[in-house]
Image 1 (tube, rainbow, N blue to C red):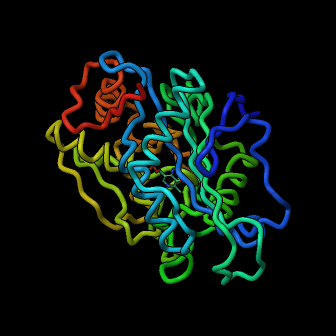
Image 2: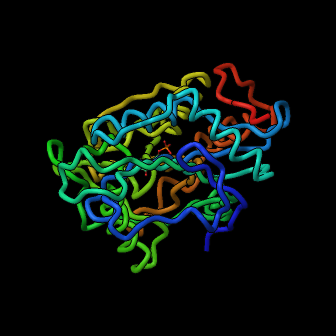
Length: 306
Ligand code: PMP
């Protein structure tokens, strides 16, 4: 269950958590016309409670709304401030932040441009998405029988509610079969991403991840990890990945706001590499070091809420 906080921001006002409800004829509920973000706030050593990469998330939120023409009544700056306010006013010291915008109540039909948009931002505590143990020991994953949507169908690079029907099928199937997460292949059978995470392989000290054209969401954690890896001197390559490369990789890990950097211990029941994970561990150390102060935030990624 969701760990409830006190207040949710909606359409310009902070309202009590329980009052953030909506009508059953909300457009977004019928046609999937919603876009959202998943962000985290961390209690950092040097700057107190901070939203991580606030601007990049809110910019992606605006982009997603633009594609589906869901009216965005608030600027990037305004919504960044709302994210800070929601965390601070709920007294949270670490939080998952969920901005959502959807076409609301007022008109039916998928092409409606008259349905008003509702915009809300909630924040609540949410621990390690793939488990604390998963972060340390790695998780067992399996390739899904469900493919990701092909280019030219539903845009994978947009973070819209409807995209998560794919994530649900991929992830449910994996969990029903006893795996922690499912890996989606792209329409052409090459590797795409996890149900809610981007995917990386380490092969002979090179770090490889599928390109945007492989039906991925261009994750902000993905970009964070690529930046940290280059800083540490690794070669980082975006390239098409054949399924069998996962079975040949030295290391594999998944990245996402919720999943952070989660190592993969096995894929399709085959142990990844030798089981050692020097590169993944190094990247985890650098990533979590941003919050403990051990990694210097040269990029301005930490945005204090107060
Ligand atoms: N792919 C999918 C399908 C996701 O839902 C997410 C989580 N938002 C990611 C990748 C990772 O994106 P980010 O690092 O921006 O959270």
